[in-house]
Figure 1 (spheres, rainbow, N blue to C red):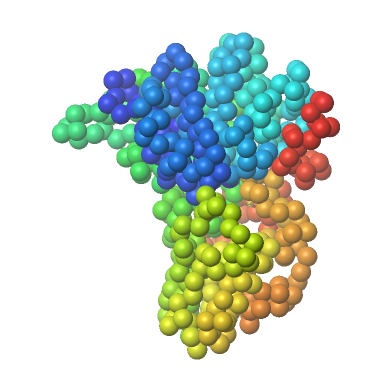
Figure 2 (figure 1 turned 135 degrees about the vertical axis):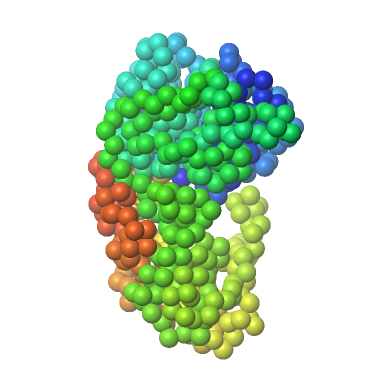
Amino acid sequence: MCGVFGAVLPPGSAASAADVATLGLFALQHRGQESAGLAVSDGEQLMLYKDLGMISTVLDERRLPSLRGDLAIAHCRYSTTGSTVWENAQPTFRLGPRRALAIGHNGNLVNTRALLELLPGGRARLPASTDTELLTALLADEPAADTVDALRRVLPHVRGAYSLVVLDDRRVIGVRDPHGFRPLVLGRLRAAAETDGGLWSDDVATTGWVLASETTALDIVGAEMVRDVEPGEIVVLEQGRAPVSVRFADATPALCVFELIYFARPDSYMEGRNLYEARRKMGMQLAIEHPTDADLVMPVPDTGAPAAAGYAESSGLPYREGLVRNRYTGRTFIQPSQTLRHRGVTMKLNPLREVVRGKRLTVVDDSIVRGTTTKQIVDLLRRAGATEVHIRISAPPIYHPCFYGIDTQVETELIAATHTQDEIRDFIGADSLGYLSIRGVLAALDLPYDRFCFACFDGNYPEPVPYDAARRKFMLEEAVVAGG
Ligand code: SF4
């Protein structure tokens, strides 16, 4: 999972596209914390800046003024193919015989090995080991005169998940794979108030356009949502023109349902649903499917909160916050010593003893992957004096790995794939355990199954995954491929 953003400002804007894209990217930081980057065009030349780290440290105000131009794309990374090294940060950049290109990619390709065979010179020509680097090289090499034509020729060979923002010298182009695994929305920069100097207006010739992984990023830059980029669609944004839509494949929609359950921000909208409300309803369904005899309902903060609120509302049990999250132990936190690392989840969560002591708790979280974090939370609450701990999960059990942009473990590391639910309950030390069903997720969303990917829950992969994709993450770092 990554965050992508693109911006085309009208000519003569007081703001720079770099400023707008960076601001938009800040709203997407939760989608990736390993690296951040920005590519801009002044209509003739592309410039790029990227580095490892959080957005605020990479794209700070000392660097942005030098990145001038009305067109920009931005990216924050969570790795699914390739290590966390500088070369793998995005946007990628490539100067080919016909064009210079920069790309920001959210998703993960499943036929990287086959695509590598299409690149003359193979792995030796790639400075980085990501599927995005390979895609950028293929597009830069493509002899078609125009970038959109190059996309239409290359994309039919590409399998897997890709929501892209592409920058050439005069356009920002949004692309979504035919399944639309990852979200991508088109927004329009609102007309500024007269008193603001009329920076943007409703006239197409002087309107700005943006693309973003989530609607919350439109809010932060003052853009209004126009629509989703459709699965199988290319949307071309150019100064002084209305967006142009080009279809490159039939749509077979399969949006990642985990985006709605957990990954995306609760203030974002997907499939016409506000995600806080969707998650609150999932919590209500969870209370119907797995009621508890408890004294209070509490979330695992922060992401369990909307579902816990729904659970409390539906069950009639009081809602309390019994765990406090330390917000400043993210990935930028310097690796702690071995002694501190043993403290595990206690570095992130601290129980409110006054709330939990002597109480029977229903604790709502959004997922269990390996089970080790949930086990530590149960232990923490018991040591703080809870008399019973009932775990409720607002998603179905994760039985299968994801190949479409979420770095879930190989099957053997997914606790639901190797243990029964009773065994999981015993492992985490809870008094009871209940998961929301797939049917319950759909009832909360009030949408049909065939709009979504549920593969990590039911093994029904919308896009066939080649067997060797299981070794996917470091595929382009392996010697056998490097020779290809
Ligand atoms: Fe989302 Fe799971 Fe499908 Fe991956 S396999 S895209 S996490 S629903």
